[in-house]
Length: 239
Image (cartoon, rainbow, N blue to C red; front, side):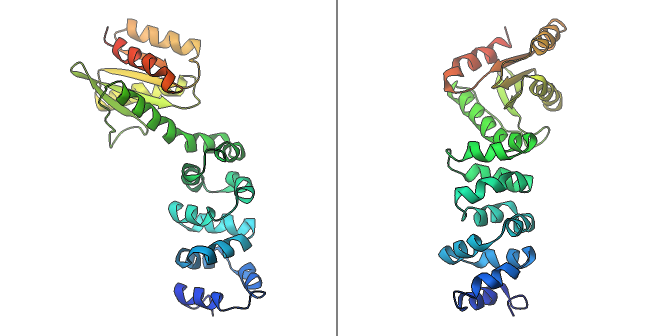
């Protein structure tokens, strides 16, 4: 009856079950069933049902729902159940989930993800933090709607700088992305920003690029303590 009823009616049927029967029924629900029912459940009842789901059911329903809806379901879990799931969730769900978690839980969640998934989860935070740092340096920050992802554009001295903030990178990815973005957006200069010390070969590449007439450099930014370093690097592009 639950499977053949509209979602709201199915939830009403579940609510009317004796307490000892509900876990038996929940155990038999497929991810497709749950993807229909969970979004229309409210408050404590949804938390109660989510708490009864197996890991396989949770992962399956996360794959069936849009990322935001999946996160709303998963957030009902206590941290000790949520953290072990992180590495097995669809990448888009894991990223969206990371954004909503308390800071004290985030490192544990990242440690369960594969490196690419973890990088995808952290990258938007780092990009926003760099944009905020540029704004504190009185730079205008534009976010383009086309071209490479995670790029910032900074109008400066009558030109534009393509800025590529890349978390966990030693400059290899950031410099490539900054150059591609500068070409795509017809910027006058490119700046790669990382929170990892830049590799020597990357520094050498940038130095050679400047000798060849391409305005390209790197900068380290890890927190607001490095705001002045970032500002100097931005202005230094045009010296």
